[in-house]
Image (cartoon, rainbow, N blue to C red):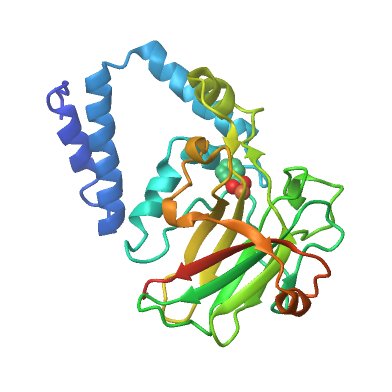
Length: 285
Ligand code: BEZ
Ligand code: FE
């Protein structure tokens, strides 16, 4: 095409991808081009603005490393991660929520009930979970991958004062689909504020850097869709302003006192503590 102009450029670029051999990849790239072209036309993007946007993306790449992805953070603060989670969630099942940057594969396996509190400072809390299918039947072969932050707000990967693998585990549920994790109450946490996503995007918009306190869970069971989700506490002050848009009503739990002596004994606890119950419903694969 010798005469590219604003009227034909989108179609010409779209056609240039027509021979991509993978139909889904073709759809993804052509959809992206179509929407980006429409956006550029709608906002009448200028050269300096486009160069500034590319320089921003360059800085996002520069600060990223094997242990830090500023691109993931960009996806989180623009709500893309949450939108993908929501689109992938079955409306009748427990909704998905942000994976975040602190999941690492290969957590140690713990027996049920899992004892994670150990020497960690903080308020003892028991997560009392149950995994069911869409009909409410217990999923007795489910497994749970769990991680959370410590009382200082940090995950073990960020904090040399914590032992490796602190406050994370994998475990199997019991015959009734139940699992208990004796751990500590998570605390609110700030997204990284030392990079371009915070400096150029989130902070100038007067947005909060805080995430409400949460437990992270990945729950899997045979023939079911694996669920990546989070559990929040209804008392948390940041529920309305999560920096990464991860809160959904079914993921907000009620925290109460656990004082039943038989349960405390079974959990090897010597004093009343907090508990939060969470029923996790998995969709069929
Ligand atoms: C987190 O849950 O820890 C998290 C999620 C998104 C961005 C930063 C942190
Ligand atoms: Fe987190």
